[in-house]
Each structure stands twice: as structure tokens, then as C-alpha cells.
Image (cartoon, rainbow, N blue to C red; front, side, top):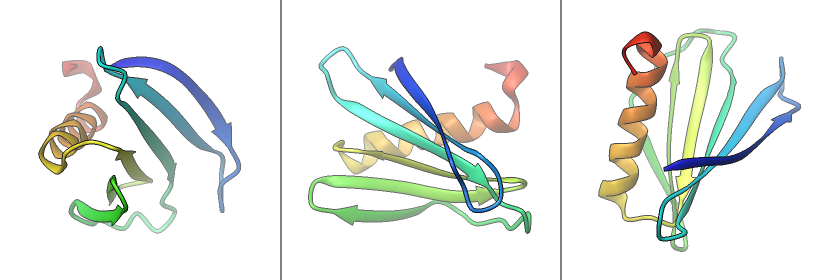
Length: 92
């Protein structure tokens, strides 16, 4: 996936970020990162609307949502990569 753009957005408590990625076939995913002021934790959860799937989770000071018109297995792999990159950014 290649980063093709991003935006700074207003959030409930603080600013949020929206990043868009595209693969070689033109499929896109969007990563939303917002604040999680209560530092709650959740496992990955899946939401579906039509052909768009979203994996979302809370971890420490941030909440994440990764959405795209991708197969569930592929989107889960990408969500796990995002999670690992945020936990150990120096290893990526």
C-alpha cells in the first residue's frame, strides 16, 4: 500500500488524522486515528456496510479505524500491520 494523502480533522477532544492508501490495483483503504482520552483498550472489531468493511480498535491514547472495499482477511492483515507499527514504530 502506498500513501496517497491525508487530512487533519477535528475530533471530540483533539485533532484526528485521516490517511488514505492505495495498492497497485487501485484498491484504497483509509486509516482514521483519533484520541482515546480514557485510554481504553479493545480488541479488533469489524463493521460492515455494503461492500465496505472497517476494523476498529482502541489502544492507549488512540482509537483507530481502517476501512476499505477489501476482503475481510486482507483488511485484517492490514489492520494488524497498523497495530504493530503503532506499538513498535522503530521496528517497522
